[in-house]
Amino acid sequence: MTPPSANTSIRPVQELGRRCYCGSAALFGQCCWPVIDQQRDAPTAETLMRSRFSAYCIQNEAHLLRSWAPSTRPSRVSFSTIQEWLGLEIRSTFQGGLLDQTGRVEFVASFETAVSESGPRAESAIHELSSFERHEGRWVYVNGVHDPDF
Image (cartoon, rainbow, N blue to C red; front, side, top):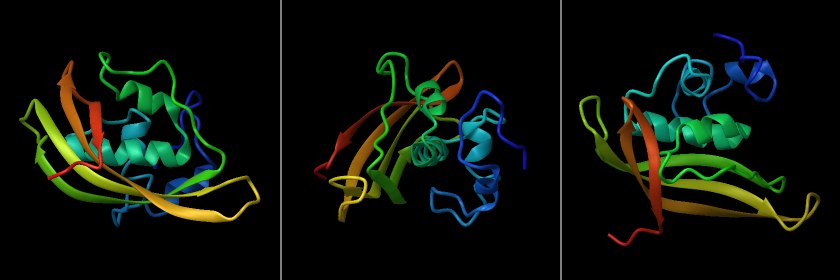
């Protein structure tokens, strides 16, 4: 496991030894962290989707912006102090493989929110069909449709 780069924000280094946020059986330091930390590119759209979910979990704005298509990228990503990501379920993928130029990933990301930092918490979820494309040889997130109607 490579420790976090000096220019990358992450929770304590011990997080690298925990099970990955994306829900895979792998350790975070061997699953999504190498993509977030630019040690390797995501080979598929699904791998990028998983790394982006993990980046939201650890509030890593740099990876989220870097992995967003320039044509749709916001100037910054905001994080909530009263929201905690709980899990990721990949429902389906279409294309987005090693030789593809575009792909889509359908997922459900569950989270908890509170009215205030000490208030009661409620579970909710985002159901999205995300679009990805290759930009300069790397997978990037383009956009997503929430609550897709199939």
